[in-house]
Image 1 (tube, rainbow, N blue to C red):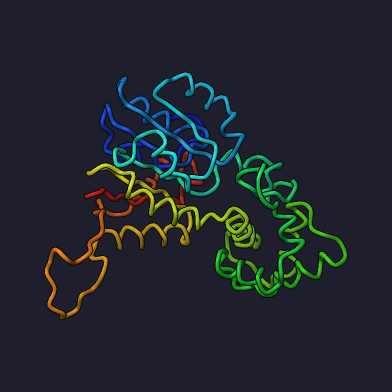
Image 2 (cartoon, helix red, strand yellow; image 1 turned 30 degrees about the vertical axis):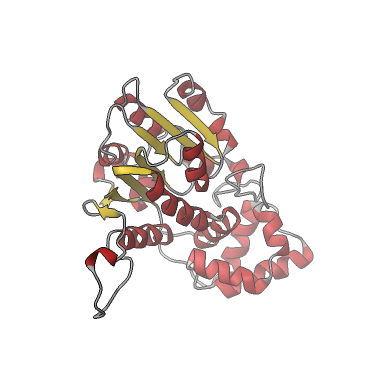
Length: 309
């Protein structure tokens, strides 16, 4: 197993159905766990393109090591740039596999300075790309209470969204929130009771992170683009970590695996019925007990696989 415990490592590589001379895309490089495995399966003619929004991932020792391999290229940016980047490299319609390992990486969670974790005190940042966009602190200092309530409810599925949003807006009238522990403490104080085995700030931190990074929109865009860049029989492999991500992936694969419209009882030729361009491969996959014991963060991971027709 590669360093940083890439989730569902063996399962993801197997699901990509790797071809030695194929062209592959790792949409979420992280620290290169999955990318390393893909490269090991390729011959001299194979190619791997990876993306990451995080400059720390781009400048990591793992990235520097892999970049010595002329089969590998690394793009600093959103995986919503998938189609444009693949086209620029001349691989449109020729990609044999795309891997998306969604969510926050372990190095991001483990670094207090990134502000992703409510368990470590650090600045309220939460940006995947620390050189672009508002920090979580800046967002919370200006967001409308009603808009914040909606974000917490929709992206965090937080039942106390209205109460938490109100507390945040009232707090900033006296002193703006600047650190992760300040926000976590405020949430603890205003939530009447907590779920078993879950910190009361979990859903709020997730919701704010998703909002400032526009994560769900990025996923929708990349999924749509994946169809046009994949070669026939090319695989799409997506690992999600919470229900909002997985719902988008599941719906996309379902829609692209069936009829694109419903002609009902109208007389219509079969060739005129718009159909999706993917077929679902197998059932959803979760980490086995052995991996869960080694890497508890894999417990919420769910992987779905589709193949271009």
